[in-house]
Image 1 (cartoon, helix red, strand yellow):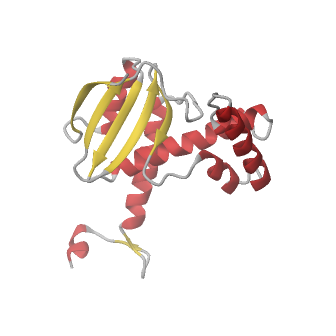
Image 2 (image 1 turned 135 degrees about the horizontal axis):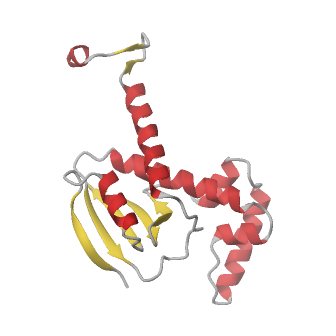
Length: 186
């Protein structure tokens, strides 16, 4: 059962400080960052980021396929096995099926989950006036493969990527030169 323990405007806290507080407290639950109907969620388990979700986020199986870690036949087979397990009343995350069938390694899954966490953080940083809520959960929903990602490493990587994106956006594409504040207004 979910119990919201803290919520409010994100700007006064900052995402970095909020995640650091939650992870340092070794909490388990879901941190939601939201605005205008968009919701980005980071799942924590005892202070570690274990998975994330964002609107229109590429599913784990599709990401592994796009990265060339599995073939479409392997993904189809894994989805079939997942469906058969569900018919017997068992839920098996697609990542677990792929590892169990030796179609991918744990490292392949961790890399994809890490990418999803970084993507979720970067996208949530783009919200101009975000709100947040953190709900404690007794158990993290097993729908996703669970990687145990150090929050400091994930946040530093997300902020590095976000800074690179901002720098790229401030370059005039027609001349390849950095725009200063005065030329942006013109």
